Amino acid sequence: SEDNERSIFALENFLESVIHLRIWSFQNRGLSQVLDNKYSAIV
Image 1 (cartoon, rainbow, N blue to C red):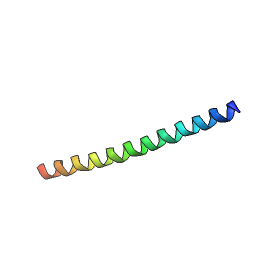
Image 2 (image 1 turned 90 degrees about the vertical axis):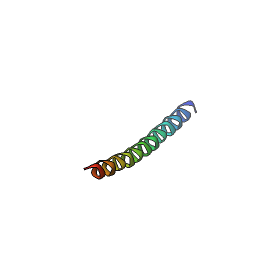
Image 3 (image 1 turned 30 degrees about the vertical axis):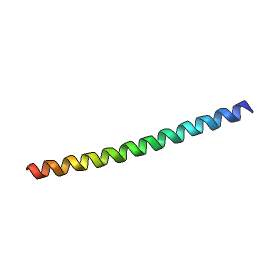
Image 4 (image 1 turned 120 degrees about the horizontal axis):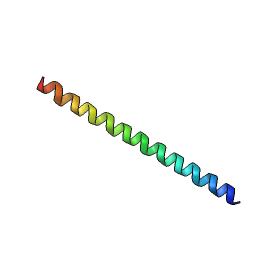
């Protein structure tokens, strides 16, 4: 049914955004670690 397709589509969108968020936060954490290392090397 159309409702079924719509909920599957919503679920896929949700999962995709969660994955992007996790990847982004992972990259962010890596970036802040690099910045911390550079900063402590300067200090």
